[in-house]
Image 1 (tube, rainbow, N blue to C red):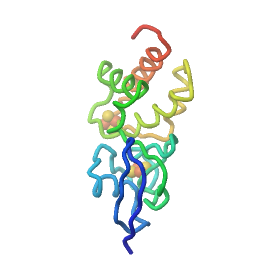
Image 2: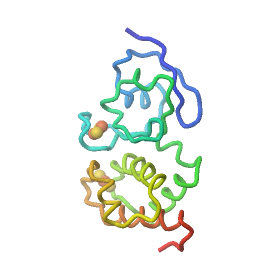
Image 3: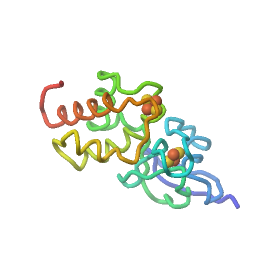
Image 4: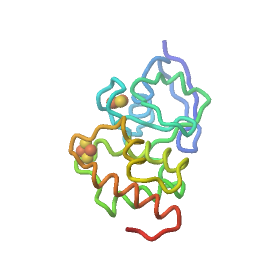
Length: 160
Ligand code: FES
Ligand code: FES
């Protein structure tokens, strides 16, 4: 049965009228028209649908929308709002990281949560952080380089 569920998305209050068991992914894409979050495996295994809930990455395909009632959600559309998001977007553009781009929103979400909590990570640290994310294009090398570049910029170093 549809009920009203309220939560914050990218800094703004949102309300959706939905069955509480509806995946957050579908509420974001269909109810709120935030289509940057990708629909991949729908089983919690590819990472394409990752969003931040209270700053932590979760797979939105297997998170019921009722689980985020009263909480804060961030999607890729919110990345321009702060320094870490901007640094990541810029680095991915500059490194031309990704090919088809389908995996990137989820990877950027994971990378953001990681860089907020980890200063000056090694490449191995970054690869480990991305362990739950699949990239079928095999763009891993440039993705890792882009995250290294963003980390370097955020710590005040020069871009690679
Ligand atoms: S679509 Fe959610 S993990 Fe693959
Ligand atoms: S760039 Fe195509 S799946 Fe990663």
